[in-house]
Length: 162
Image 1 (cartoon, rainbow, N blue to C red):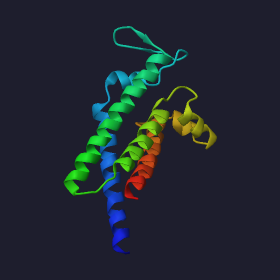
Image 2 (image 1 turned 60 degrees about the vertical axis):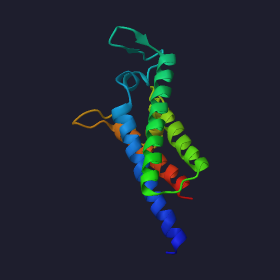
Image 3 (image 1 turned 30 degrees about the horizontal axis):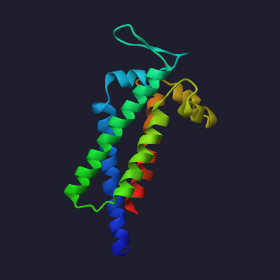
Image 4 (image 1 turned 180 degrees about the vertical axis):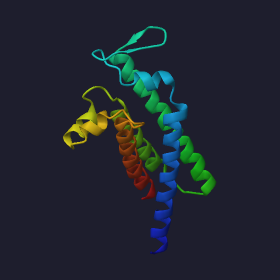
């Protein structure tokens, strides 16, 4: 492996690790309870808040958008602070592209409405029963959600490594 390949490989590994930690913190520590509960709301399948307010499609879209913005900001902070401490040279255009890939696909996956993108994918690939599994300490939709997020974070890291 030549020096350029070694540099790209190290940049990919570091970028993926930083994107992954930013994603995990953004999803599980930064995301508000309101966004977590409301981001899948629709008029046909509304969510009732703690105060009794019923949230439909518009509130679900807003909650998902707010979550994806804070998620992307958390990934950006992890990526930029980590890159600085590691001495990684990242180009602004690549950082923007990587964050856009991660953030936009995150919205598409997390807007988990009945019959949404992830459910349709699960049904089309024969994973519908796993997607609906919510028993024995397992939640299939959550596991599939994470797997797809990891896949797009890998694509984002590859963009950063180029």
